[in-house]
Image 1: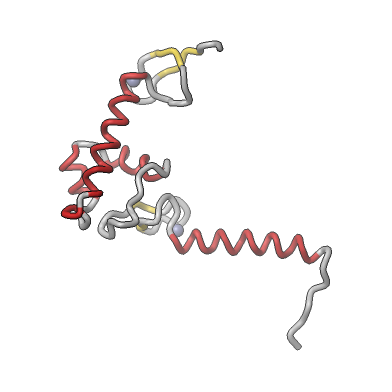
Image 2 (image 1 turned 45 degrees about the vertical axis):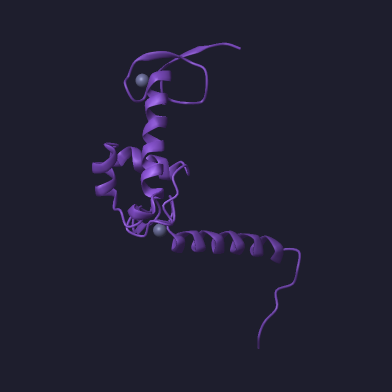
Amino acid sequence: MTLEAATCQMCGRLFMKQSRSPYCPSCSEVDFQNFLKVRDFIREPANKQTTIGALVEATGVSELDITRYIHEGRLIIKDNPAMSIACVRCGKATNAGKVCSACQAEMQQELQGLQASVNKTSARAYRLD
Ligand SMILES: [Zn+2]
Ligand SMILES: [Zn+2]
């Protein structure tokens, strides 16, 4: 296995890359601890109604990092209705994840439409009239 040098995307230090993580070992550890702090906080029944702002204040973890955890699929905020991030597709506030549920449904439909048009070439299209 060959080690390659990479620049840590958090502290900018050069480090030997040993995993897919874009962060150096010490930043990876800090990042993981931050993630645990955030996850444990929103899991508390008393904190179900927390907002991103309150979460940032309570944990000291930046909104950018929290958003990243959600985008990476590590942090699930479905059970926290007051938490929301901007959908990467339409920009609307959502707590469904990276993409809001409306967009997820649309993307699903687009996919089905694509599959249907592929199927049409082999099966004959039918009409209602
Ligand atoms: Zn670092
Ligand atoms: Zn959307």
